[in-house]
Image 1: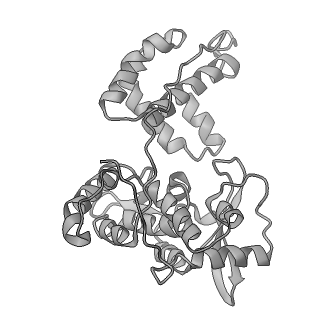
Image 2: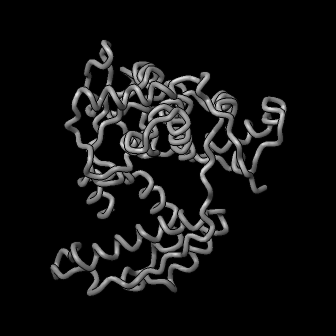
Image 3: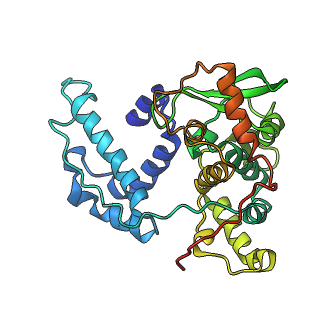
Length: 312
């Protein structure tokens, strides 16, 4: 609780994921005294994570949360009476190697249509926004109305979202093409803070979507895979059956490149460049970004024929 409150005060964008992982880990390490949390005592949790189908990246993410908490316990968090830090020294937590990293899977337009029609409406809206902006998962789930600015681009008033903190630690602007703008406009008035929300049941109030790679996403990709042969006339690749929401971001990168968008502009759109672009964008820069994302707004003659080498 102390850790989550502390990180919430810092506005950490990955906090919903971390809260989910902490809740998942609690049955395995929640009762272990903090001074006894180290590699050996974490082994059962790591094995359970592997048994649940988690790859090294997810296991590492969970262990990184533990490691961060232990470091704070040794450097920041103090006992209310003794005022001493909770740990004299944080133990070294070994992270597993990334030897099973999954290859990205950019979608074709036909695959996008097949998948999106199987998604529940709230996820379909988030997916459509993502495949037109290239935002990271947490930049979509945590998107707030307070970050929206209105400006004129190509003679029309449009939205630009200035994200205060990104994975690179620097703010950046997200310029919307016509499709992304239509998604945003459809979300207005649903929630006072967050852009992407859903209702848990009939009569329930709208609430923030905390994570995207959950059961609704997994069920939708299963249904899409079952219809793949009929719709696309080929056997669904294994990577499509295991499609991640983050693959939508890779789809944007692939489409921008196919449309001839230069590397520097692609990097700005995807938030890869750190320090070169800030919240102070000139009108020319905003127009350049808009023109680039507008190229991928809809399938057209510029859409490439994708050649894949697929394993499995």
